[in-house]
Image 1 (cartoon, rainbow, N blue to C red):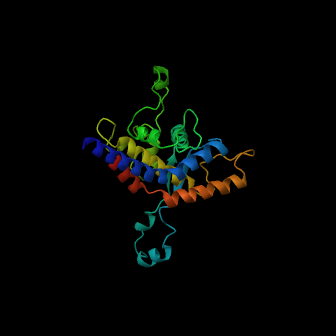
Image 2 (image 1 turned 120 degrees about the vertical axis):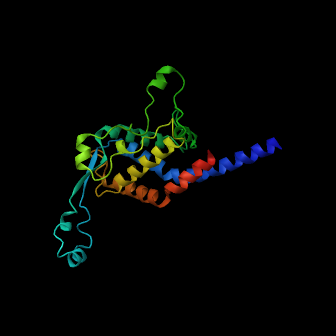
Image 3 (image 1 turned 120 degrees about the horizontal axis):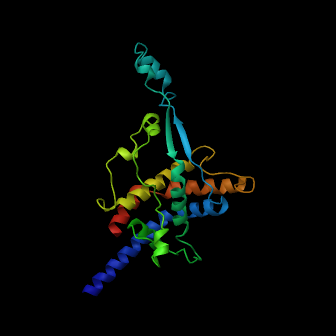
Length: 236
């Protein structure tokens, strides 16, 4: 009976891994395209939010003609989507996504998603010797207190002021960090002209960008954050 139950659990986990793989495959292809064709050249990105002033402007004027104070509420705000300190961590996320679901994997790659599942459990990939372990880099930026610039230029509450979560007090810490970084990655790639990627004369041709746009569209169609979260927790 114990053997039969173990076999059933193994088959159930295998089915969930296949379902997670179907969502991760477009992300793996996206990472491969960026790291290979675009040489992994990334840049920090800051955007200006218009505070919603352009939306329903006429309706706003009709209903608030006599309210002069409220007319100044929609000030432009600066929002840092990817700080320059966070660029290496985003590149590391892409490197890890690139290493899964490979048809002909190298030493650092895999045909499945087991390496990423280890990442989501906080288990280092490199454990051969102390030197390898010392160079292990996380795929998410470390949380720190917000700078003075962030306090005065962002409308959102800085991450450093939120309830501090860590691997010690949150079982799903690495999972949530992964989902947050993937969400940030997709947001960066849907900006007009994709300023997140550094386009040079020898790389990022028009054909490459068309290919990239096709992969991004596929990611948006397939990726479901809530579904992946639920499947991973069931698998775990």
